[in-house]
Length: 54
Image (tube, rainbow, N blue to C red; front, side, top):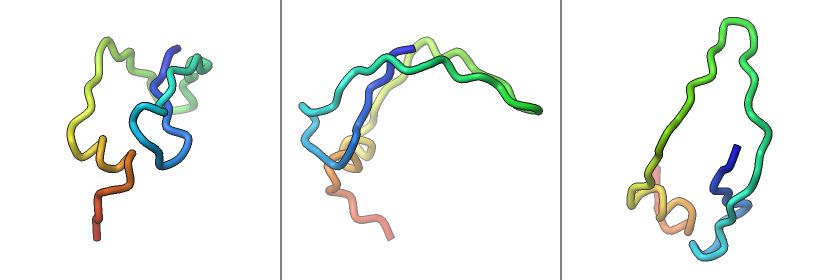
């Protein structure tokens, strides 16, 4: 499975696409197939460590 990965707080151009193992469901769990996802401005601020959430 491909994933957009942020290893640490860093500029957005340092995000990488990585191949990760497919998750497996444990007891009483399900795996949901995601066709598409999006980032919102808060997600981007968190990656850049600019958001101050208390």
